[in-house]
Amino acid sequence: MPEQYSVILNGQLCDGVSLQQASQRLQKLFKATAKKVESMLSGQPVVLKHNLDKQTAEKYKTALLKAGVMSKIQFQRPRAKSAVKDITKSSNQGHSPSTQQPTPDWEVMPPGTSIGEPKPAHFIEPDTGHLDISPQQGYIVEQNQTPAPPPPDTSHLALEPR
Image (cartoon, rainbow, N blue to C red):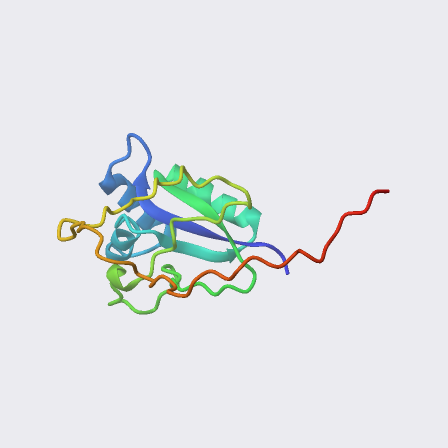
């Protein structure tokens, strides 16, 4: 299966391009209504096209740049199904942009990548104000009351010279 890409808009405009100019250019480029273009430029990530090869995705990005709108190309995982509807093929005219699921703005880093400094451990001091130390009153374990055994009898042992 060839690699597939999505073209994603997040509503950012190029320097020197007004919202009205970008809206007019996108309406002309995609032959879309003002309402549909307004949802494209809402500031929320919107998948403009998906399941594109790299070359076609680059063409879309270039055309959008000429129209004054910033976009990004994102690699699609082979088995993943996009949860965001393709806005240019949407047949539902009453579809509001608030019901669209945005693409995640995070990415998976390679193994071993540092993700930041570890936070120091936070220790909580226990409240010991209600405890006190009282003088010793006896033993926890009672001492054995039996006398020690007598030493062993060694009178029958003798040392012989060698």
